[in-house]
Length: 147
Image 1 (cartoon, rainbow, N blue to C red):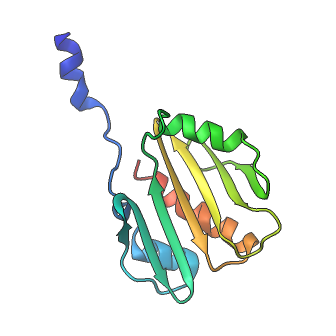
Image 2 (tube, rainbow, N blue to C red):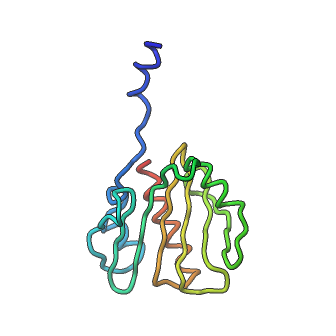
């Protein structure tokens, strides 16, 4: 029992403040836009940056509805919803997928990332879908480096 208590602080803590995971410079470099400072959206686990018609959000998943963030990730990746496309991608975290509205070119594109027991989503608005995929993947890789 004592060993378990001593081992606790050695575990990496999951980030809980989304605005600290990306910088204005990273977002500006990826989007090509000048964006303002990130601001929380209703809770510290979500953040939004915006400028020049571009919006970037980052949300850290928390347990909800009795499901862990990893359970939510797995459900989201395999669930088929009408009008919503999920598409696996590599090179981000341990596992990741795009999520976007089928047949819509500028309705937003997200990358949902699993890294360890943590899950987060980077979502973009104001881009054509092909560009949104590239930019959201870049920003997801940047954020994953902080988990």
